[in-house]
Image (tube, rainbow, N blue to C red; front, side):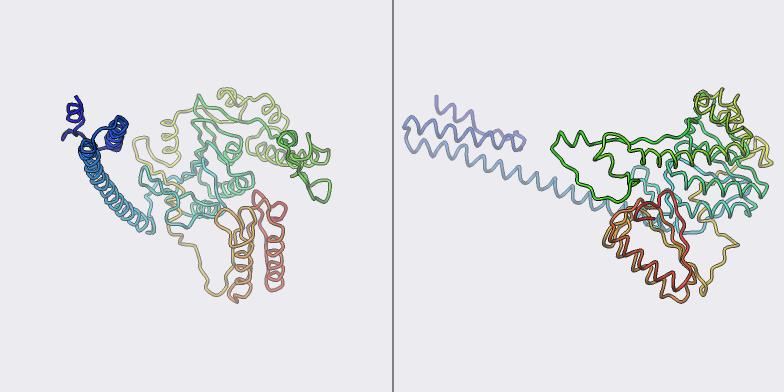
Length: 452
């Protein structure tokens, strides 16, 4: 009976090696060794069991390791080949992307207001890389968009601009600069059409009012509702966690820390929030009123009643000029370009138009103006693309101050502030630079605290 058990437990040559089978064989062998030793069996029988199970288990483990190593080797080879192919593809796309681009006659410059617009375009060759589609679609910076709009006004191949709206998460200051550039573009006599086939958010609508006509999909929504400010308070939650917040601040209007020490807005903080939100809204309403021919009182009433949430009511109230589908939009663009509906029209994305040479752009090697971007939170050290390093910034300002070919410095600030010591070090270098040459500051969406 015992011999039959031993034969039954012999390893089958068809068994696929795996950790589970190997461990099972080893455990089974050890269990039978224990069983026989417990009953005082003969040593020869013990060694027979050991030879039959344990040694064959080791052989199985060897086979398993062989298959495992083969699999790992295959994965390594595949990864290397995949990396080489991807690197070759990226190199090809980058080489093609660096070449100047030419556009055809009767082209429309397309401004898609659906992504956050940075102050400066990303110069990295990998910016905008989509690994799924293996394409590179860079997001143009505000500097590139403004230059492209100005360039398009003098480009005979560009017949007009199409603003394709959706989300507009770039901040009111960025929005304002693009809108002003579009208004300047219209002075060239070329058309601007704005269109949205989904939700036209409030910032997007404000940008659209720079266009001669605004069209939306019949089923879309115009999100025109006014501005508000919200503050979340954490004091009670922190108290439940046993966390005590100790704050050092100066002045009654330093409201950034209030959520940690109060349960509601102080009078001073409420006053300043209402002041700057109200100021922005008044400016927006005033410009929309001029562009659309609607009184500020009526615009405020439309916002209070959420009139734009129904496309037909947005049209009837004068917020938009028509409810059309995309095919009708294309026909409209063709007619405005002096084409027939059977002709083809070229849509030129903003990032592509950046690579179109500007015949009027002059470059001087003797008299230059340095444009320095300070975007992000201020921190000590070198910093990175998401924050401003105090040491790196100071070194850059110092370099431009000592460069005799640099006649002036323009500093673009888009920062909520940050480290106080780093801000002070940066301020000192700017003070020294201002004594050597003109220093002009341009403030973006944020210029708060240390940024200011």
